[in-house]
Image (cartoon, rainbow, N blue to C red):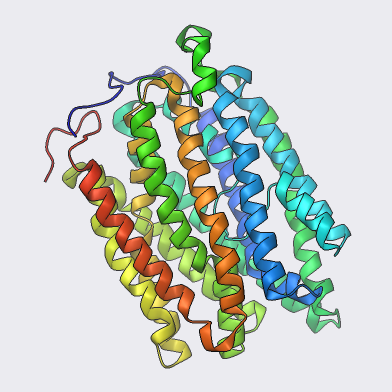
Length: 425
């Protein structure tokens, strides 16, 4: 495979635009990721506390991610036509609705409906249509040469916000229990906070200006609607999507909610300490993302994606093999310290190799592929984590499959350069 797809100079960027919209989109990213981290540290603990079995938790988390994939696929592939701001507001409303439903009932059928149609993040990572639409909007607001660096800061801001959220979520739950609340009620207080985040996000998205919208003149022929919003880059995006789905499936075995549950069951770590551990991991992940821009400028986007991701996956598989709690935490921290360099490079690469009017759709399709991939894993991982003799297996499975993904990605895309990359080293 060689050449470039959809390459033009500073495609879709508007160099004269002020930074107000960039700041707003960074703000929504920070608030949203705080909410995701806030929820992730207690979600599985909450579901167990209200009486769900390991298999039921796995089913619910899988349907949460599958439902998100379906809703987000439609929203992101139509965002450039129905309006990016409208899609972002719709996502915030779905986030609010899911939080309210999880607070209001413990009935599994109702939770399944809320999880399927709403926006809930069991992993502490992005879900919903937000990331795809924000990436496309930011790519329009800055020049191509600034994109990877901006995405690195965007990832850093999100990681720090997730870290703060996990720290706060664990602390709130621990404080509530210290004051006499039952575990389910303490965890429910955190979910109320998650729903409130949805309300604030709705207001912030309403403040974003029309400058983030793609001009009508740049929207491709109407027939593209029937092809996921893609045209000349469709084949490349679908190949990337299949690989990203594999990576996400592997990651679904070790989402942050499961990691928190494993540390709680294996070592008896309380919610406040769990929040601190995940906060530290996310801070390290944020700094690792910040290094991605410089590495990508020197070695290329694909090389940076692959060769920083491989060792992090080895470390992930080693976490449950550590004989003590401090060593397990150390292995987890070492993994997160290099694990996120592939994220801004992956996002920038996807935006770089498609045309401007494919950006929302390309980010959406690849994002949905990741959601579908990660959705399948909890069905397997949930029962494994709930079985003492098998609780370590998901870490090893996750690390091994991610290594396979890295090798396949390098083989398939090492020769397809993004615009501006003159060499492949």
